[in-house]
Image (cartoon, rainbow, N blue to C red; front, side, top):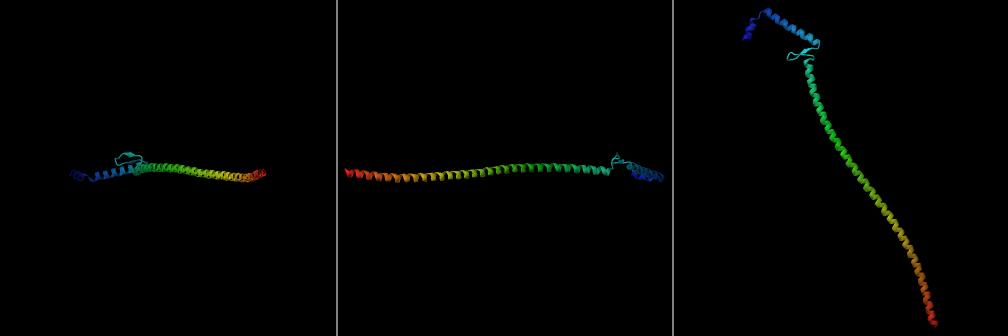
Length: 158
């Protein structure tokens, strides 16, 4: 109620003074605004426009969120790189095992081939020895037959 009374008791000249003071304040704010100075919601003098300040705060928060997301992304990528490196090492180990097994099989095949050649050479040698023994046997049989004939002739001559 006191507000109503006060408003009712204000004279027109006082109202004009109040309007002029408001205009002067607005002019002062405009002049300060042109100079790069502004008043915030608490009527404190600021260098930045309140809208710019708000946008700066929002940008700062967005940047923080972005940095956090980049950090998470780097952790994920780091884990992925470690996993790929581990898989590459395992693949390399398996590759080396396969190469070793292939080389072992090749060496076994070469050993068998060499062993086969040795056995074939041994067979050829034994065949030659058999042929020599056959010839020697035939010669001995001939000698035996001659000796038996000689003995028979010797016994009959007596």
